[in-house]
Image (cartoon, rainbow, N blue to C red):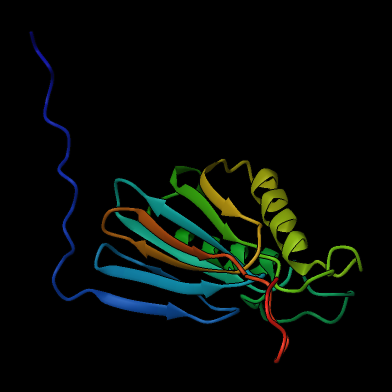
Length: 181
């Protein structure tokens, strides 16, 4: 029985890895020798990875978009719509198209008790903005870990496309001198 050619082996971590940490509002696009990581609360990270070219990037956006219309401005990664536009600009410098990338989305953890009830749930607005943008551009998510409470550590290994997530749920905070019942 012919089983066909063997599957590509899982790529091992290459030597000389460039390890990039993204702060809020930052993004990075790199090659197979790159690892990109970030720490998220209510912010959201989008990862894009090309399985054949072994190129990929991540953005860490803070809010959905700029408020109000103003004069022309330079794009900033802190806004969801502009961060995705900046990643697309990086993709255009390669011989690839956004539709060829695996897209994953993480974050949007609520950080404040009662924020949703008060109409100030930036985490939920960030998640909705990312989902809307991906739908607008016809990009389907291959994986996501969204919402809840607390923070997430996210790591993208561009050589393999693996994304590692550590989610720490927010626990109730105790006031000094008050114990749990």
